[in-house]
Length: 255
Image (cartoon, rainbow, N blue to C red; front, top):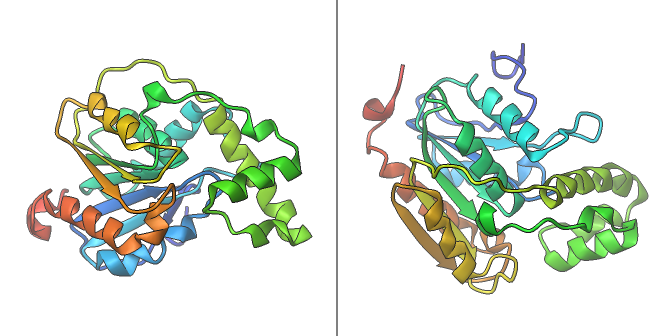
């Protein structure tokens, strides 16, 4: 039993503080190597009506072998939470993880929307070998992409802790292979930065092919980590979509 939640073993989920009667849940899946705490500032912006949950991808000592195993673990833990309308938000690697979780979500999870940021749709994903680089080359690649504090790797103790975690996340996304599946039934929102070279607008627009429901695309200023540079606008976009699910807490609550 997890003493913080009163639920089962929610080892991959971090439930941020929220109001007593949230009308919706936002589950955030971060980019490779990020800690769930990166989303902590979002709690205040979202307000007490939205329960904020963030996800971690395991540790080198308890790491999933494949993206499929990771998605199954996350989905099983989400199903342990009290049922409420749930939006998945994934950035970069997190967008692919969120998609794979969305495919597995049962009615118990209450999925109402998938939001992806800074990532191309799974059918356009190409395997890579970044996780195989030696330490110096790997760190150089991370710093060039942005979103990772270089100070994590200048201190030997921090480097020993974080480098294996980031490398493990990259192994999962580098070795991910998309297998065609029926489209999702929930709405999909895609976001990207106008200067994002990892997820250019023309490719991100292809997320429309992943659903039979509504699709919309939002382009923000900035590059791959537009959600850090433009956090308040990104969260405002999410709030507007959470609100579309049905305006009042009472009408959205589920038994």
